[in-house]
Length: 65
Image 1 (cartoon, rainbow, N blue to C red):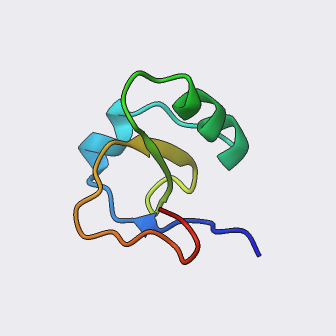
Image 2: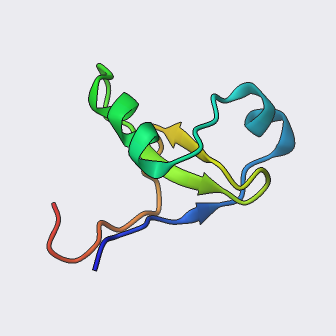
Image 3: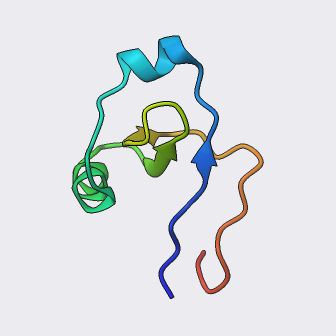
């Protein structure tokens, strides 16, 4: 079973400024090329995927980390 990550509550202004990805795979490919550690999440507002560097309050899935 694959970890899908959280659906995060993003404020409308933040969602509008962020780049949107149609698929998790596309978003993860961009994250791998970044200089900083980025995480993929599905936005509750637009239903697409964004990148974030935030990790506060998140637990890694079992078997990771």
